[in-house]
Length: 365
Image (cartoon, rainbow, N blue to C red; front, top):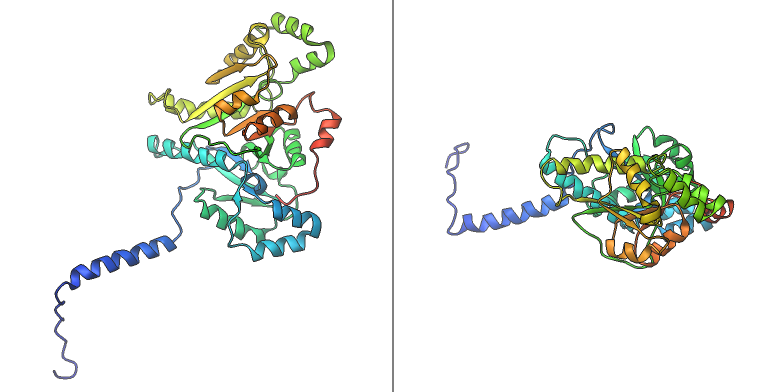
């Protein structure tokens, strides 16, 4: 062969083609697994139902919090940097967030171009350097969380309205109180005492009534005048709607998304289910609660009137992803039965003694 003369293509040997194919597929799979998974695009905040979650609500950070409290912020940041490739363990809000994403998947199937979806925002006062470990943890669990708010030690509450927040969940009671005072639906979330399996395909949210969905008007009467006067008052005002409570807007947002499934004939297969779990008695004070919801154009899928009985056993049967109540003894009872419960610090039940009990050391969220 003369210099510069083009070479004849070599003929592949017997079996070369079939041997190359598996090797190519194997290599492609290897590199595909290395590449970040493509996640759905976040909806515009003004179109979404925005759930803001703190890092300690989404993930368990007990050891990190201990270091922050006992050794200070510098050791805390150093520890996070040294462990940034270790994902955090799931925290109390984790199953709730996964259920939100399951609902989003169903909505995208039915309405491919709609942005009427849940949007989860990680809101934390952590230093930005901790963000790498949080991002690694989110990617490890394949969560669709693209919006972060990291405030480097300052309170993030002032940003919640700018994010169009419909609900804020945190492990820090003081920050939750700040949010409630700003008129934002918020709750302090607690881990259950034991793990109970929850639905992977249906989001279940349970609400107390008074001082959660409704105002604390009725609870004030109980505290000031006793149960007999309360029953008389509720009967006399049965057709007068109660004023709204701090989480009425969140139930409204859930109802809006439910109707998107109803319009497709999927009421019975709806992946969102809501529950009213109240200490009210159905016969003496239940009608006003239901008529109030009706006057707002809202409903819950189930209404459980317990007439003062403990809520924990019923919640164990419902297995909600989250239960909201304004009284800590109901939250504690739910925790004992394996329910993720969230305290809403609103209304007359929040006595100075209870408020002081919920305060805690400053935290890295």
